[in-house]
Length: 229
Image (tube, rainbow, N blue to C red):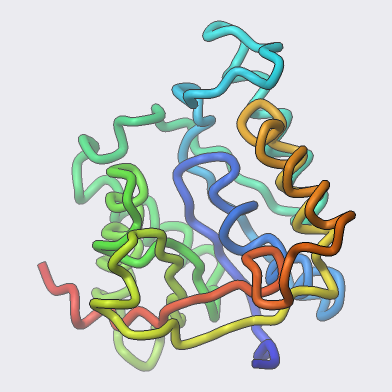
């Protein structure tokens, strides 16, 4: 599917590297080929990330600053010029007040007036922080007049996603931007070094098929009215 022109894109994810795995190719295409303004609101610094590098180069004390710098580098790889680090605590988003989270998203929407928002697909995002983020985005948009609502595209990672939702509604061929996606992933070295070493070897050996996750990014169109509180 060809990318649809957008006035402004808003990305709302809880952790550094969520964007690299989910939408890096699509965003690089929008910023570098279509000159679309993109704002990335990253809720935490991922300071509770399980990995400390491979071989380890971070400590629990140094990881927050390392991940901040990695996030900046990943945003640069994707061509994102407006990166917002919102300072919430990793692995606690699910415990934040629901109205506080909705208000946070409402404020971003009011400021930016995005035509498209990327987040996770509620119920199929695996991590509690992912789910809480998706709920806040969907509820903020649900409260808007229908004619003013931006479209929401959700990424899903649960094993039963296709079984329960059918195939993703939108498939974007990002093979032209594959190396931008690889560079975004590599920027998050503390979390991805072990994986990227193997992935780059497979790229060099020509093993990655045209429909692999590096070449195709998949999204569900989220209808906010399906998620009434």
